[in-house]
Amino acid sequence: MSSYQTATSHQTHDVQRLNPDQCERLFAHGIHEENVFYNRLNFFMVCEALLFAGAISGMMEDKPASRSLIVFICMIGTIVSLLWWFAQVNKLVLLRTLEHRLIETFPEIRESIEIADKRRKIPGWSVSAILAHALPALFLLAWLYLIAHSIIIRGGHPDTPVAEASK
Figure: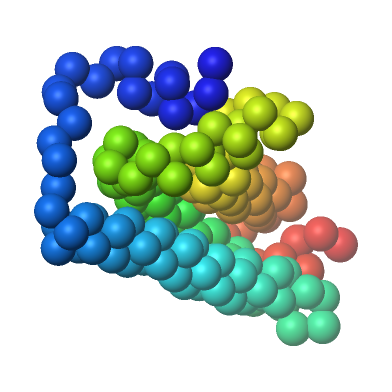
């Protein structure tokens, strides 16, 4: 069963026939929302990478930072990861809704998706869904590891530089 069939089998409304202006707006809205999805993904990736670089730099032996600063940066990273995950999943829901409306409206889009689903090694596989869930989750796990590493594994007083506590 294709992802189109799976997605449309639960719908109860009738397909409305749209005039050319409505079709154009629907298509433009779909493109806009997809751009927002990937732009947001890029923004959060850069934000997380900068925070991560700051946390790792603070743990380096040549310029140690206090443990409380490292934990603070990691907590900010954790919150950013959770916000990112929430935002991406919500945008993914809208993207999927628009995708299904486009499939219903444009037969050539439906045909292309059905052909692609037949050619995929894993039917229904969605890169967007993986990006919306996996990247924020991986960063979240990395932040939690760094917090545990800074507090539990290294031990010591919170204001002790991380590099000194490991000696």
